[in-house]
Amino acid sequence: MTDAALKPTPNDCDLPRIRAQFDTFNDAIDYAARSKKGLNFHDMRGQLERVYPYSELREDALVMARRLIAAGIAKEDRVALIAETGPEFASLFCACVYAGAWPVPLPLPTTFGGKESYIDQLAVQLDSSDPAILIYPEEISEMAGAAAAKQGCKGESWEDFSKRDAPECDLPKADPEDICYLQYSSGSTRFPTGVAVTHRALLHNLYGHAVSMDLGENDRCVSWLPLYHDMGLVGCFLSLIANQFSVDYLKPDAFARRPLAWLDMISRNPGNTVSYSPTFGYDICARRISSQSQVSERFDLSRWRLAGNGADMIRPDVMQSFVNAFAEAGFSASAFTPSYGLAEAVLAVTVMPPGEGIRVELVEEERLSGASRDITRPARYRAIVNCGKALPDMDVQIRAADGKPRSDHQIGTVWCRGPSVMHSYFRNPQATEDCITDGWLDTGDMGYTVDGYLFIVGRAKDMIIINGKNHWPQDIEWAVEQLAGFNHGDIAAFSVETANGEEAPAVLVHCRISDPDERVKLRDQISDKVRSVTGMSCVVELVPPRTLPRTSSGKLSRAKAKKLYLSGEIQPLDLAA
Image (cartoon, rainbow, N blue to C red):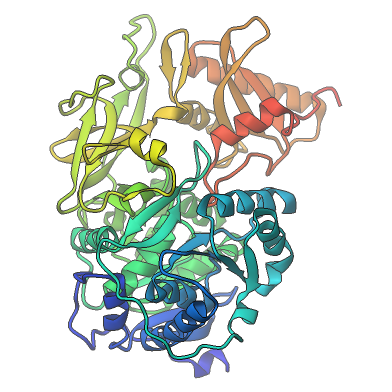
């Protein structure tokens, strides 16, 4: 069927809107299926290729649920699903929910790392979640099958699974306190851990961010985010069902190859009003524009009222570049909607009220690091982005190292408490106990509050501590990025032990220069830049492009970069070559 013959699911509300106020996610699917809305899947060029109303999704999910039960899948069994953006994953995820099993969305192979690395990653996640079966797309059967065999679970392509018998049977009744699914956090600073999310926690969070963002009757979403990451899975899939939205999907690899197709899709349908992205998504699009005339002729972003920002540190300079690039297309800076969240709280903890846009505070770096002010040096500042206010029924508190609450403007660890906080880490009581105390979740992030707004400073475990002084790796990385020729994500900063036994900052930098003399100049230039930020010498290593490891959601993994560098798996370029 051609694109012209397809008609996308509508935006208009043909059913009274219920903002995720259901007892279970099963009820949410049942209700959404009464509307004409649904999922719309697009090809590499952003052309519509499959329309999937919620009514059809529900029918397929019920058939798949019977197949799961006939295959011996029992309530509370885990079913691992490779989360490719398509109707197969959507129906299988909902089928698991209907069958009382726990779906475990897992990543597709990415361009970061090779085949063996992906098999190893998948096998460890399978070992953690201990699923009864792994179901995957046929095209990755070799890798997925190898991972399943390595872990010892069954593996089957969804093409083969869909051919199984689906005899009539009774489906188990869901309870709000039942686990709905397992979500693997992205593993930026440690290996991914399975977060167990109950129906109640999920629906509370979906209700909370719908209210906080004032999601309206006829809003429509566009997404390229991967469905194995919480922002993609919860914000751009589960939320749309529970809040009865239509959505237009572009696959993550399609976005990676043609990022402007995302903005084409937002422009094409007048109802496309909501879309989310980490900072790097906005950055890529701003860099791809060759001229302002191309912007005004090609795009219409005037109806984009909620441009969500989250999943990594929000950089105001990147957001400003995006505004500069797309203002001619009608994009308004006030559409930016910063947020803060984590899988351990389902998705969102705080959200900026709609229309307030990006708001920043300039904070002295000494205050960020906890050091005393050196009056012999000029003050240095970092712009810290306001991540908004807490969702309904969510409490946010900043605590000092001794656990005592801190006042406004005082930096400490971010803790949160509310119905959205996770049930536990799956089969990891020690990790659960380490981060949850009396119902409060220690997020591991550092920040401060001002008049009910939350400002995020960085990840506590990423902090570089040398001679008793704290340095944020973001400050070092951002400083190097100011040099010509670098993109966001080209630099990873962390601490290492030098030959004399002392700690020093180390900086791994993607290098695209082949001339040995120019490489030496670049290394020295970077050393000078880092010295100007930290006041000390550093280890600078130039590495080949695309060497620095990423998490499953595309974020830089400093911890893994350090591990690979120290083990010799990341080999620096030879400056004498």
